[in-house]
Length: 207
Image (spheres, rainbow, N blue to C red):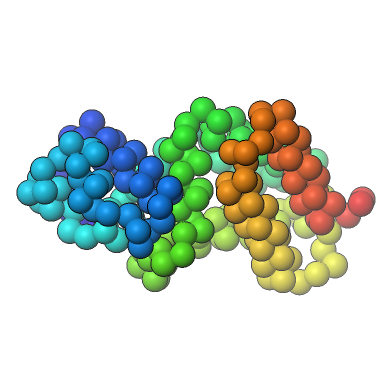
């Protein structure tokens, strides 16, 4: 990211991030127009390009800013917080907090959709890649804690188990982000509860 982006005023930066997130999430990375984003957030082109050099840089800014806001809002537990008998209690609370945050802040839903856009920059230096690696590393550590405490099954190699759980979580998350808006609040709540039970059945050694 350009060092100039850090020099934007907080209000201007927030307005730019929210406007860009709405465009990226609604029309996709490739179809998102910088000219429209610049117009809709009320910046001049000269001001915009003083702070942001490219569409990818803007995309990375949105991923990082909204990602940090989500982590702060939800208070993601540390892997060691899942130790002992707290694993499934912590997991359920985390799902509840994520669901509540997404319901209250549309930007978090838009952030989720941005992870599944075709054509979005995902090279090793991108914010999307950094965020994905952080999620994968956190999940791997959480599963390791659960396996040691006996609350997560250990009959698969942990690397395979991590890949399997991540694939299922991504499938559930992507479907919910695409179709959740068509559901009423009660149906969406029931869907999330069923998805949680699906993951629990996959991992809980007690069945």
